[in-house]
Structures are given as C-alpha cells and as structure tokens.
Amino acid sequence: IDKRDEWLKNCLKLFKSKVFVDEPASYNEISIGNLNDSFTLLLSTKGGEHFLQDMTSAMVDLEEEIGLKIDVVLSYGGLWRFQEDFVPTQHFVPDDFNQVSSLKQWNSQIPLGHQIITQLESKEKSESVHNLSPGIIKRALKTAISQLSDIKDLTDVEEHIGIGDGCLLLTCWSEGSLAVLWNGRGHVDLNIFGFNAHYDKLMSFEKVFITELKTLETVLRDVQPRGIGKVVSYAKDIQGGVEAHWS
Image 1 (tube, rainbow, N blue to C red):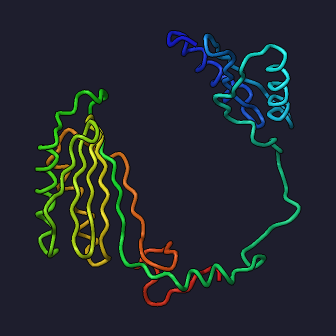
Image 2 (cartoon, helix red, strand yellow; image 1 turned 45 degrees about the vertical axis):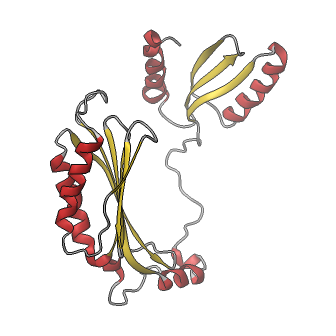
Image 3 (cartoon, one colour; image 1 turned 90 degrees about the vertical axis):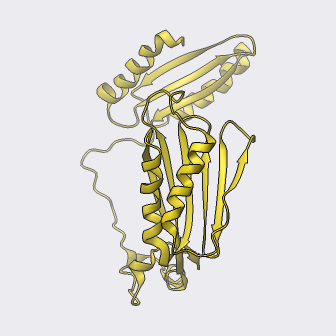
C-alpha cells in the first residue's frame, strides 16, 4: 500500500466498524511476499465463529503452495461472536472465590511513597519545532528543584549527554529520586519518587517545571503507590485500618 492509498485502509476500517459492526467482524492487514518484493492484502470481513483459525490455517497452506512468506501485520476485531440479549447461565460474586491469599496481600501492604511518571510533549505538531536544549532543560529542572527546599541532602544534578540525541538528568536525596529524560526532539519524561510526606511537593514539581518550558504540555501523568508487601493501594486509602469491601 502506497502512502497515497492510505484512504483504502481507512475505507475498509470504516466498513468493519460501520457496516459489519458486531463481532466477530474484523479488519486485517496481511503481508505477502519475499525479501525482494511484497504487497499488503487488506481484508474487512463479517467473520465467522472460527474465522481467525481458518485464516491462519489457510495462510500456512498458501505459503507452501506459492512459496511466499505470509504474515498478519494487523488484525482488529474478531474476538467473539455477538449474542443479542445474552443471559448468562450463572452469576459469580466475590464470595464465590477464595479470598484468603488476596486478603493476606492486602493486609501486608505498607505504602511508603509515590512514583509519578509524567510525559511532556511539544505543543507544535512537528517534533522538529521544540526550542529545547540540554541547557534549557537543566535550568528548568534547577528552578523546579528550588521549590523542594524543605528536602535536605539533595545531590547536584548529574548530567548525561552524548548517549543519544537528547540528555538524561538525575538527582536524588535520602527519601527520593528524580530523573528527566529528553529525546532530543519534542518529548520529555519526568520520573519522580518520594516518600508520602513529600507528596504535595512532588505533585507541584511538574507545574513549576513546565512553566519554564512553555513549548511543552502534559500529555500523560501516572501516579503509583510504592512500598513493600506488593503495594496496590495509596496510603490515604487504607489509613485507619480500612477493611477491603470484598473481604
């Protein structure tokens, strides 16, 4: 498929979602060829109960017959057969399962801190327009670090340049760490860890940092609890001996 023919893919994808609609309908891209030449077969189908298995089986037979390599590049849909007004034969509730090991893990967890991973990207559509450099990012980092003034024994910023197009900046203290990764274009990752006592400060770090980098905006933020005992809960959610509602 030439880039000029991308509309063919979009047309068949729409056909799958707007015409066939229900599972096991699927849209598939199948590459057929060898090291010297190849083409892509686009297939949008209403499917069947065993369509994917039948297609895989047919691919093996066809490879042997024509001597070309056949690979499924993309298969979207075809997961299950739609059953209108389906009524399950049996319902299951938490009490139907053995909760002993799960409850043991729940009670053993001790949340000690948070890990906050943030992705920043250029506001411009083109990654080539970002107006960033290792120096600019380091200055933004130092400015943001200054708002962590109540954190003692903060180390100097460790700078790694030349290992790729961008840079890696690291700093840590006795109760946390901070890493800033720039890909050399329009993407920056922040990875911060700190104990619970510093949570508010850590959350405000991003705001100060991005204020210094006006060409970037936050596209993703992931906050996770960290600690011991296979932690899955935040400290604020289980303080005071809160019991699991499913136990």
